[in-house]
Length: 103
Image (tube, rainbow, N blue to C red; front, side, top):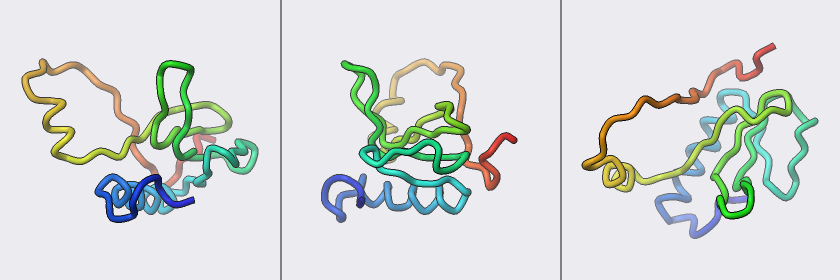
């Protein structure tokens, strides 16, 4: 499945780059409708629906059936406007690894 929206849209181009980065790091990409967590140890599910009222995320990352993080495709300018005039808060980051399985 190609990313949602026009293939020329900046967010769609970002998703293509994210797909390449995830597969290059060893993640198995799946579409939400064909999700099968038994297919591999490290799976990235595109356009994953969250609980009712919480929308969805561009990618939900699973290791051994457990959700471990999310990845969102956003424009840098959109991120800059989100961060403007906001106090810094501690955050936790999920990094792509060339060995995503924690076995």
